[in-house]
Length: 252
Image 1 (tube, one colour):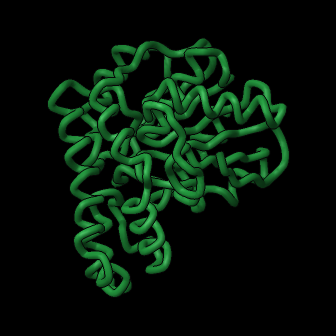
Image 2 (cartoon, helix red, strand yellow):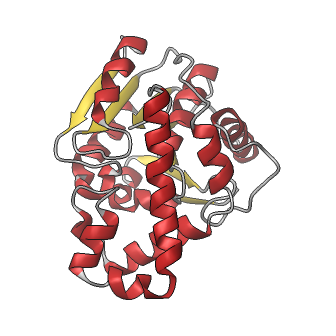
């Protein structure tokens, strides 16, 4: 597994969602690296990490992150996760690998319709990127193009630079681990949290995992801190980096 490491202090591991890469956390890194030894990973089959022979589900990704931490000598870090990575973060908390968890719009709290919606939404985004192909960079270098094509993930898509939008779209289209992870999204359900501090945050304008799923999260995690990120989309780090960084600082 490839990863980006920066900062100093107690360890904080950051885990991206399906089709994404460690760079999704860049808006919050300046605030976090001032307080933490930040390790932002690329899950197998995403970003710069090659695929492996695993099934692409939450438990497998949790195994791989644990193996990476063992190889680095990192013990019981705080963990932040987004979407699929939020489910991985909660699983690491359940196993006692993580001492504290901050999960942004985590998978696993939907019913059958919500799971199909999530699968269909991310699949359509990837398919659209693949179809647009050569014209995608030109489209994303316009404000209208970023608003239309990135609005599914961001409530404020114009906060992205053109280069960031192009790189993210290419990473989504090219990710060899996408198909397996998308399939497994519909099968995994939250199975319980650990005993450490846990924060679960939902963007009020999330189109991929709508914030109404927060009700089920509150039922299954009654002792966790539950937060609404007003005006934020599925990837709130670009929409409100200050609020997201503050949650990670407070929980970690």
